[in-house]
Each structure stands twice: as C-alpha cells, then as structure tokens.
Image (tube, rainbow over all chains, first blue to last red; front, side):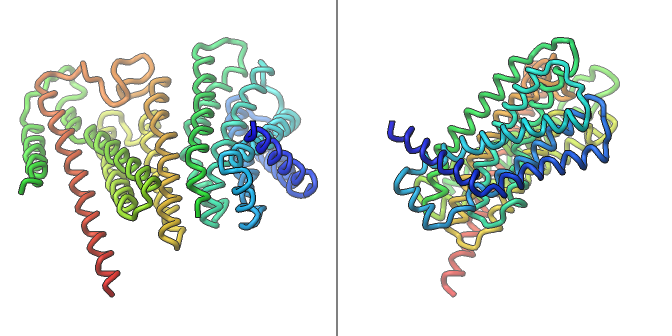
Length: 219
Length: 225
C-alpha cells in the first residue's frame, strides 16, 4: 500500500511539474504538429497503406523526443532524495505511468492532426484508437527505460535512437500489421493474437524495468 | 592438456564438416537447389553459434550485476563481440546463397530482417559502451542494456517469423521452426549438420576465450605500467 502511495505522489509531482512548466508540454505538441505538417506538405493525402506507415513512423519520432528528457530535469541530489524516500521500483513505475499518459495524449493529438491534414482512410475507428493507444503505451515504456540508460551516458537523443530503433522494430511491425486491418471492411484472422502479443510485450518491458532499474541508479 | 579436449574436438568436428560437407551424398530433389544445399552446413550453424554466444554474454551480464566484478564484464563483452562476428558471417553466407537461389542477396524476408535487427542491437551495445569514461559505470549500464535487449529481441525473433510468410522454413503455412525444418532433412545430411553446429559453436567459444585471455594480459600490463 505504501508503494501505491509513493507512486501516486511521484506521479502527481510529475504532472504538476509538466503543467507548471508549460513550455515543455507545448514544445512536444508543437513537435507533433510540425512533424505532421511536414509529412502533409511532402505527401499530401496518401492512400491507406502509406498513411498507416507514416503514422507509426511519426509516433516513433514523437516518442523519442517526448521521452528523452524524462530523467534529465532533476538534479543528482534530488534524484538521490527520491531514491531514498521512495525506492527505485516506485520511482521507475511512476515514470513509466507518467510517460505512458503523456504519450497517449500525444497519440490522440497526432491522430486528430492526421485526420485533419492527411485525410481519413480509417474504417473501424474504435479499433484504430485502441491499437494506437496500445502502440503509444508500448513505445513509451521502451523509450522511458532507454531514456534512463541514456541519461547515464549524457548523450541523450542520438544514443536513444541507436539503442531503441532496433528494439522497437518488431513492435512497430506488429502494430502496423494490426492497424492495417482497420482500413478495410474485411475482418482478417490473427488480430486478437497480435493484440495479445503486444500486451505480453508491454508486460515484459514493465517487469524488466522493475528488475533492472535499481542497477542503473546504484552509483 | 586435460582442458584442451574440447579444442581438439572442435578441430576434428570442423575438419569433418569441411570435408564431409562437400563429399556427403545429398538428395537432388529438383533442378533448383542442387549442390547449393551444402550451405546448410555453414550458414545455419553460424546462427546457432551466434545465439549461443549471445546467451552466454547475457548470463555474464547478469553475473556482473550480481557480483560487481570486472571479469564477468570482460566475458560478457567478448562473447557478444564474437557472437556479432558470427552473425555477420551468417548474413554473408546467407546473402551469397540467396543471390543464386532467390535471385537477390536481400529480399526483405522476415528472418533476414530479424538478423539485421539483432546485429543493430549489438552494434548499439558497443556504441553505448564507447560513450562512457568510467569503467564501473560502463560495465553496469551496458550489462543492463544487454539484458533488456536480449529479453526483448529473442522472443520476437522466435515468434514474429512464424506469423508472416517467409522464404525460410518455419514461416506462416510452412513446416518447421524458424531455424530449420528438422524433420525434412535427409539422414545423411543430418549426420553432417549436427556435428557442424557443435563444431562451429565450439570454435566461437574458443575465439571468445582467446580474446578474453588477450584482454586479461593487456589489463595486466596496463596495471604494471
């Protein structure tokens, strides 16, 4: 119960910080908007397969940039303070939760902008939202953990991309494949299997983060 | 000499592979595959060896985090490095073969992509190591990445290819597992294939241990100076 309370407090702290320092939040929103605008200028309104591919690539870049600063805004001393009062597990769980919320909000914003600018080829809208949110969750979990690693190496975005892109490719392929069937009115087999696999992957990442994060913050 | 038995075994197995691999009678089923099937003794064992070496590397990474010693870190790095070399050789031997059989060296097959992802991950592992000055920090954080990447990579390498259609065995709608279709192999070929797998894997372990010894000597001299 104590750890639940710790996570709640840490999450509240992150949310408050985000709302008070609004420029970082608006920075990410602006990043989403300008990326999608560039895609729109260079592609116009593409057909559904291209639309789908572009959507996931944009999600990937948004995620790398949104997660990159997660472990940099606090000083070493304050990090140590959090560590001693709440423990590493609660700390990483609160970060994962916060970044998942942040990424899901960004996912919704980018869906909106995609629909506005690049047209609407989506047939099953509810399913598409569900897959996108699941994708945003998976991306945010992986890149939060990698941000924690990269924060230790002081080479943020570049290192995160190098480490993260190969790790995320299978998940992106799976997401793209699962999302492909929302564009046509035919039901394809294997959909629930893919969703289950994605959920299992997310669970795996959370478990790995809980086990491995304490080692990152030992020094 | 007692400890050298597996090195002798390695040489014998590889001599057997490299001679019998070219001599053993193979079934010619159609005009397409012909003698190029002998690549099975060289291409497929590279992946067996790579996976074994990466697995040993990740075990040493776990040991490093538990024991905090420099030796486990050294073992983890050198096994990963040797595994990477075997991965590169696996890709090369596959590409040469595919150039004749599939018409192009790279056809974007699910297994080819998986292999490329594995190599990228381990390249990233070395880039990550290179970005640290402090060796303790380097060892711990690269061990964390090694474990994280391994745990995420291998389920996907073994699950995803089964879900798509593939030119390799084990894809959707074809027999076998993603490595090979074992039940389809002629008995005479099986007699060469499995010794080849063990021979190449032992060679990989041998190279890694040699490199570890070399690094230990280098460290020893560095501390003397």
